[in-house]
Image (cartoon, rainbow, N blue to C red):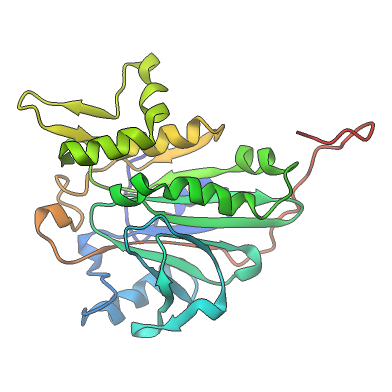
Length: 286
């Protein structure tokens, strides 16, 4: 697990996790309110975000706690507040490639963790995904939809290569310490992520626990971690900080109406060519 330091400057994490290919930002309360609509301070705050990301164009998909993941398409964008671009329809996952740069993707959040994902698309392209991972989206299957979209970039013989190259960052969100849910929510998540619960039994870790008062507490970080781990993703990092009890972030469950920003963009540079294993004897890599 990684402790985040300065918010607007996460350059050390960008280099360590993503090999300096992208820049991501996670804001805290001290950075201001990043709620896109009905926010008089959004214009000034988004200026800081543009400086931190190094891009002018920011795409803020309309989050609806759905399972919908979309690929970047200029035709599906409309102008929003402070020059930020919005999607015409709701989308809780958004994917851009190096062909789409320079552009950043941003979600305004308050307790939901996000996943920042970087994958190689041989021979030269890269894909950057940002997923808004509230419990409703997770229960509805947003991670499966993300996988399907990422695999659509390559032929079936390169799918395994994409997943072996994938780098995952899980941003701060509400922790198991504070995420109390009812039985209906717990059952919905357990039914969808049975394997995520089982895979960690070897390490005596569980995604769902009951405390002494019989409250059901869910660990979204572990659900996300285990989901990608069981699919062969080797590079996973979690900024495991609880947005509710840490006091450093806006939190819906603490009664805040303001929002934190999670944003990511490719750095403007020439991307290295991706080397592919040679196929000998006419046998395709599987």
